[in-house]
Length: 622
Image (cartoon, rainbow, N blue to C red; front, side):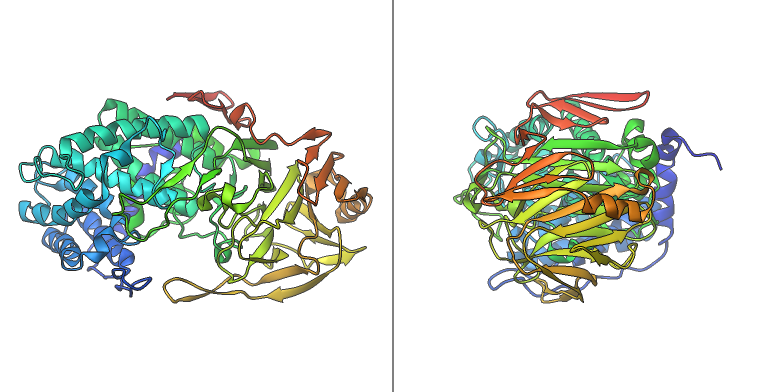
């Protein structure tokens, strides 16, 4: 069967969207449960409830069916928040779905661009009321300033901050044309026109800064990043030309950033905010999985979910070059990815309520380095880590240090992976857990003494997609579909057993992390070496074992010196005092390029990004 071109696959977007919505045609509204508050004094946790409402309404409006029921559902959702105002400014409920309501008004409201009047005037009036209450208390002009912050002052976590300002921009845009709201004063004393102008300018600056200095502090987190970009579709479809251009280019950049470090939709590379129960599995229902199917035909057709409605209804499409990168795993070949990422700064107030104008935000500093995301990509595997300076926790903002992830994913039918990581004490959250050095498929890592809430170092191996591990000469060897891997603990022994980690979520639910075979280190600060090599480079498993066993290493005082299976020489100071070296050169945490790979390139602070593969190329000029 002839392989479809990237252009042809992208052209199938509308058919896939239509199939997704029509698969649920005629079905009644099924409301998700309203959950108890996540903490005392907070509103109920109703994110899923609101998602179920807006997903139902979007499906009805898209198909032109059950319009009375769709209007009633939107009114019901808005009335819940009017009756329960604590949930309006709570960071875990209201702003997660509100940009979808604003989109539906733009497309189907009284002045709708798609089908005007399908959302009635009565419905529109009611659903705007809680949005106004959110905007008037949670939007203030100093939050939108760019001269000092350069958009790197982040209120709450990164994805919350973006969801928040997306609503402020969009509501002020609509309010500026509505007599009911045009002249009402926000809590900061300004009116909608001033807020709209401020957030318009802020968003363009935000996009430029992400192209200049890295897109995501919550590094390569497909859940939170997929949530972060949802509002960008509204800027793209309903903003003025400058805003539309900035949004479209940032979406292009994001999907290129994602595409080159995944295999068939499974994400690799160094990441952050990967909660412990997420660390060992790909989430097929996660934020990026539906988008991978909608744009690139990857995976299975998803259900209609409130989280993904914006993308499904947007006019945005990734460029063909990005689709080519995403889909052609074999054709990408073997390559390295290096990226700067932001994370240094001053931790701000961690608040469950978004209406806190007098509380300090997280203040990222972008005047230095701190993190070099490195991945080595082969059609058979992707191994990566965030190489960081060994710094105290107070040097970082927590959205960067929380639950950093490193390891290897393998190609194949199963979610095969190896994850060397300090276990969180509560099996959910730890911060600043490790540091590392990597060159090609060779990684050395160690638990940091500066950690917060980390227990012993473990190396987790999936049962799925990997052979039964074998131990020889104190080294654990394992085989994947297209690669071999080896784990060596440099100092002290380890215990090897199957382990199930139970995790209690903030909702009270108990989640069981995926069962896997786990190495528990006797010495929690012992360095761990992970070696991964494609089978195509080795003449059998025994040859790989022999080569790993022959790799020379020594420990001079606290410095580990190691020659890898790729014949590179790494040094790693287990006392944290010296920067690791690769072939005699210290790791540069602040390289001249913010993006560097065969497919994605940009100089730091330039704002000009090149995406290319073969004859396809797109230059983004932010």
